[in-house]
Amino acid sequence: MLGRFFLYFYTIINSMQRKNMLASILFFFMSFASMAQGATPPPPMPPPPPGLPIDGGILMLFILALSLGIYKAYKMSNKADLLS
Image (cartoon, rainbow, N blue to C red; front, side, top):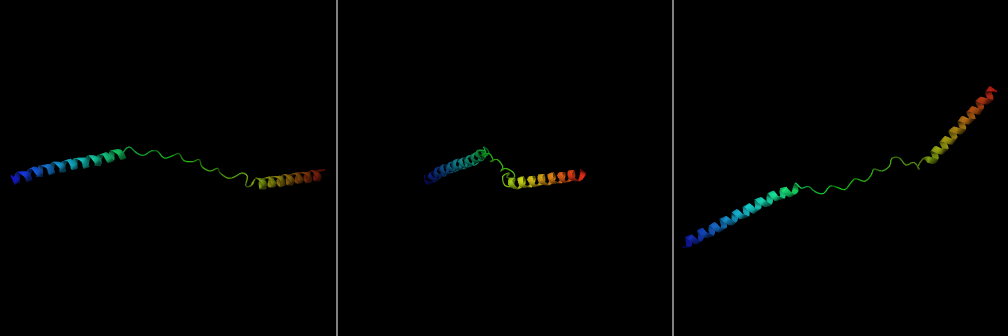
């Protein structure tokens, strides 16, 4: 009778081990299936910053253009004076 009890107890534990093993295997493969779904896509990238700032050297560019214009006008007037 005691032998039957241990045999019955062994079959219960053995079937529980099989159930636990089956549950573990299913959990393992389900985790791979959920990882294959992928995450949400990342947010879009912000636009790149603009190139060179225009307002930084605009005054210097204006002064340079004005001085070049004055120089060319002076040179043309000097050339006209020499021809006449």
